[in-house]
Length: 238
Ligand SMILES: *Cc1c(COP(=O)(O)O)cnc(C)c1O
Image (cartoon, rainbow, N blue to C red):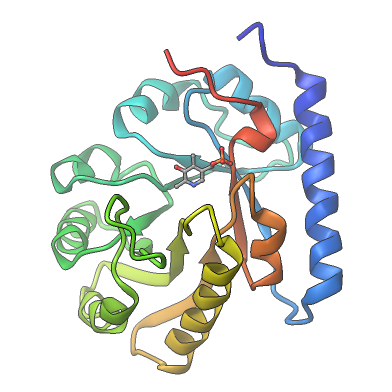
């Protein structure tokens, strides 16, 4: 934890916020918001808690085990007095849904009916409605999770039938090279899904943009950028 600096994190967030504002002012007029998520992987919870002092209240979690080991150390109320929100953003195995169903406010990595059905089943037993995003493999990359663009609308139509799930939008991790092309395709796809007016969905969120491409993602309609390295510095994998 000694490598992390409170002041650096504050400065990083000021720069990111100002870059987002600049990109938004230049390219957007849709009136929607852009929210910053702090992606916490490998960062000690005591350090993660610092971001609340700088006005963030949204954390992104990738790994179930790591999240479970950290969650009790997160402050429940962010600096502004609003409760800390947790979104699960990593690949999620069906048999691990049970460990997070009660704790997270959204699951952004839903890419199959099988996973959605398990989320729905457990949400029902816990008396809650889980907000989800559908993860899209916009670059068609073999190594990445996510549904293909062609299968997206049929999948949303099926998931929308599940009573204890509410689909709030789309999430993607575009290929790092030619990111611009894929961000643009993602924006088109997002509007196509919105225009399809699928019953029981509320398509509002387009979660895209990470440290290397968040300013471009804002240009292409992102409503939520997910940033790790840009806030906390380079990750130290043990
Ligand atoms: C790690 C991660 C991020 C953040 O990546 P950075 O390049 O560190 O900003 C965003 N989204 C997902 C799904 C991630 O796994």
